Image (cartoon, rainbow, N blue to C red; front, side):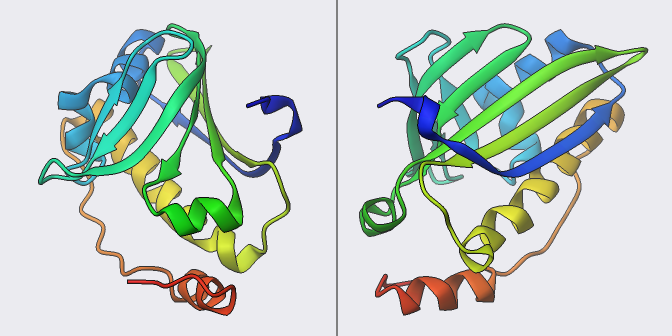
Length: 170
């Protein structure tokens, strides 16, 4: 797969009172990610071509992908595909890039979600709801040791748009 054709659809930047090394560890450690990713664990083989997996709290594979860029502690790019074959078939793969930069006594973390085809705002509303919650909880854990408790239901705009495309939804 060539990542050159992917265009950013969602970009979030957050500043965290931490170090690049600690932010990198938080993004790539299964144990640490459970603290801010609502019990999900991120498993990543830190090499180009390595596996990228997110498991639900019960251990089921929720997201799978491949590492495309790995430059600790500065940049990680992975495919980020929900294990829902019909979704990937119709909407294509998702590419997620984390860029970590020193910013004074803090870290500037930029997360970019890119796609290889145009997607409607309704389809993108799922990630646009989820990413701020995940990144805010990451910031909270790194700065205070405590995750944020954010209650969210599946985004109805996204589910309705998927149904319109003929994709069965939960």
